[in-house]
Amino acid sequence: MSDTVEVSARAEPAPAGRPSRGLPRRVGEAFLRRREASVLVVAVGLGVYFASASPAFLTQPNMVNIAQATAPAAIIAAGMVLLLVSGEIDLSVAAVFALAPFNMHYLTDYYGVPILAAIVLALVISALIGFVNGFITVFFRVPSFVTTLGTAYMVIGIVLTTSHAYPAPIPDAATETIRRWFGASDWAHLSWCLLIVVFFHLLLTRTRWGLHTIATGGNPLGATEAGIRAGRIKIGNFMMVATLGGFAGILDAFRINTIDPNLGGGFGIMFTAVSAAVIGGTSLAGGSGTVIGAALGALVLAELQNGMNLIGISANPYFLILGAAIVVSMIANVYLSRLRRAGRS
Amino acid sequence: MAAPGGEALRVEHVAKRFGGVTALRDVNLRLGRGEVLGLIGDNGAGKSTLIKILCGFHQPDAGRIFVDGDEVVIKSVDHARSLGIDTVYQDLALVNELSVYHNMFLNRELVRWPLLSNRRMRRLARQHLEDMGVNIPSVEDEVAKLSGGQRQAIAVARSVYSDARILLLDEPLAAMGAKEGALILDLVRDLKARGEVSVIVIAHNYGQILEVCDRINLLQHGSITFDKPTSETSVQELTDLVVAEYRAARTQKLRADPGMDARPTPRR
Image (tube, rainbow over all chains, first blue to last red):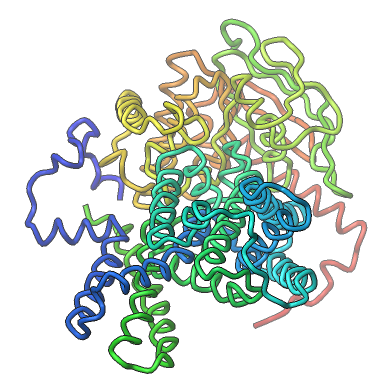
C-alpha cells in the first residue's frame, strides 16, 4: 500500500489545478465528492417531468405550495442532519413542532406576554426539551431513539392535555406584520428556510462545532481522546433540532392561521425530515451528512406529493415512492461512500 | 545512559483500581528529557491504564506525578496537553470522515471566528508533514483512504506538531506491516535526534523497541519490576522475563486449583 503513494505532498497542487482529466471523469468525481449533486439532479428532473405533465405545476401559486411544503421539513432537517452526524436521532421534534405554537398562545393569551417575547420563549422551551433529550441520552446513556420516543409521547400528552385536544386561534396580539413575517405571507417559509439552511450548512462545514460534530459521530472514542467534549456537542445538537422544530411549528401555525394540536401529525413531520436527510445523503450511522442535501431531499418529497396530486395520480402511492426513494438513496449512499474511499486517485 | 537536561516526567507510587480490579498497584517511573523509554509488559499488565492516566483520560487513585520537576494533578486531556503531554493512541483517534489536515488540527483548529481557517490549516499541515518526511497524496484526502502506516504517521505527526514535550505512543507498531513499522521507528528516531521531545513507547516487538529506546521498563502486575538501559539488556532477556512471569502465574494458578490441568480439554 504505502509504496504506491510516494508522491511528495509538495507536488500536489490545489484541487482546482489538478491535471486535466476527461470531463466525464471530472463530473463523476464531482458527484462522488458532492453528495448533494445527485439529489439536485433528481429534484430538477422531477420538476421538469411534472412541469411537462401538468401546466399548473410551474404557476406561482403552486410554487408557493411547494415552498410551503418543503420548508418545515427542510428547517427541521437542517438541525436533524447535525444531530444524525453526531450519531443521535430525535423522534420528539414533531411533538415539539406542535407544542411551540401552543406555548406562544398560552404565554400571550393567558400570561400577557408580548407576542414577540412569547415566540422567543416558546423557542427557549423547545430548546429546553432538546436539552432534556440530550441530557438523558448523554448522562444516562439511554439510546436517543428510546429517550426521544419517550419525550415525544410525553410532549404529545402535554399538548393534548393543555389544549383539551381543541385547536386554538392565533393570538389577537399578533399584528398583521408579525403574522406575515412568521409564515402567513407567501414566501416567508421559503425565506426562513433558505436562511436556516445556509446557516446550518456553514455551521456543519466551516466551523469548529461542525468539525467536532463530525468527529463525535465518526469516531466517538477518538473524539474524546482528542479532548472533544462529545456530550456537549450532542446536547447542543439536540437543542438545535428542537428549537428548529419549534420554529417550524410556529411558522406552520401562522400559515394555516390556526394552532392545531395535530400539527406535525404526531411523528409525521419528524419522519419527513429524517427521510429528507437520508435522501440527501446523511448516514444514520453518524459521521457524514449534508444540510443542503437534506433541503433538496425535502424539496424532492414535496415535489413528489404535489406533482402526483396535480397530474391526477392518487396520493396513495406516494408512500410507496417515498419508501423506495429512501431505500434506493441509502443503497446509493453506502455504495458511493465505498467508492469514494476506494482511493481512486 | 543518562538523559541530557534532567527529568521530563516522574511518576511516584501511582495506583488505580477499576471497581474490584487493580490495574496499577504501585508504579514508579522516570523519564529523562530527550529520552525514549520503552514500556513493555504482558497484556493486562496496566500499560494502557498508565498511559491513560498520564494523558489525563483517567485520574489515579493514589500517587504523585511530576512534570519538569513540578507536581501536577492532570485533570483532563486538554489539561495534559497544556502541560505538553500528548498521546498517540492505539486506535489513533483519527476521524475517517475528516480530511488529513482537519485530523492534524483536531480540537486545535485554527479559527478566524466564526469560521475555520481551512487554507492556513491546509498549508501548515502540508508543510509539517513534508518536514517530517511523511508522504501522502494530498492533505485534503479523507483519512479513510490512507494505509495503516500513513494513518499512524499522521497521528504521530499531529502529536509532534502540537509542541508536545512528552509524547506517549501506545502500541504504535501493533497491527502494522514491517515497512509501516519502520516508518514509525524512523519518526521516533528523528524526534530523538532533535532532542526536544521525551517519548514513552509501548510495544510488544522487543527487537524494534530495543532499536529506538534508551531504556526499557517492564510493567508486571501493576508495578515496574525491571528498569535497565537498552545497552545492558537484550531481546532474549526481555522475552525470558515475560515468559518467566507467565510460568510463575501458571504455577500459582495450579497451586490454587490443582484440577486445572487434569480437566479434559474440549476436542473438536
